[in-house]
Image (cartoon, rainbow, N blue to C red):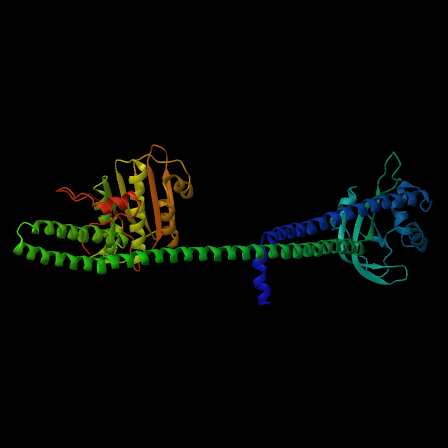
Length: 513
């Protein structure tokens, strides 16, 4: 029973089950309405037959000669005659072969003069509505439930009957002169068995209909469920493949970052240390030369200065670009460093929402490191695309946290040339692999990429990362705008930085480890 109770909601929720249930409800309505309609049609047909039979009995009574024909004594004569065996034989012969289960004859006061029922006691019909209507000349019928019926042998039974009351006049019904009321006759037609037969037939038809409906539903349901299962299996397989691709992409990005980090550590550690040792030796050599051969130390000092410049500027900053250590402080610190670096090349404005700024207070970031790194890399790539392709005069970086949508939103927009490709893949063909890599970063973290661009109207790249801060409260507020630090001109980019930028590599960051 519990299992069946669980199936019913599932069947009703199924499109086929809902349609079948609707058809079933319509069929039930048709069943009851149709039963009433057919029953009423049958009763009208029986009533019409019994009305004709009353007219026939009235004619037979007048034309048989059993009455003298004296209109003045017709009522008294009929009352006396009704109590005789002759009248009983006459009536039984007249109704022989007709579907009449019982016949009663009443005087105009409602007293029963005669009945084919020899068992029941005579009752006055004066108060009954059918008798009153028939007394007025209106032939009336009524259904009587469980009426007592007795046959010629005296055997009785109870059944449903249709009683039709009609007026008998002292002239025949076809006499154009008309007549005066003489008696009221009622005949009873047995209808119980026929009505039951009609209802049984309808129920059989409906039962067959519902049986066929159930078979159709079962077949369609099984077929649709099998198709649904196949589609679900295919969808599950696609989902698994998608997750596998996504995990593979994430592993590739992680491996790429690990390789960059290893190179950065090697440059920052072993290579820089060795260069520092060379610089120290050059310093010692310069001191010895200075002591022994005056004037030669300047050449050595110049070489040492150049080595130190390579170590401090080129290799140090290149290692920072390969693995931005500043993201350990926070995503906002990384975005600020990118803003400061690219301010040397193009005006950059950084807009930070208060909710995003609240995630990184006192040098502690609530944002996972891989998400911070993704925001940094995506901003690098987008700003690199702006410089290489957009021909823009200004660009804006937006960073915000939306607690209600549980997402971090990064936007990079410019006022450059723009393009008309509708999606990231087509845009990548026009602007290089930058947008494709941005999409890889976003997708690897379950985020989404939206590119809005039109020719001559610039480009807006929006990346949404799913993120919810544990125990965070929604806070409202405006947007904080941070400008690039003023005062003093920035140092020009080094040779390695320019080469890295021209080759489309990652942009560097300013500052210390």
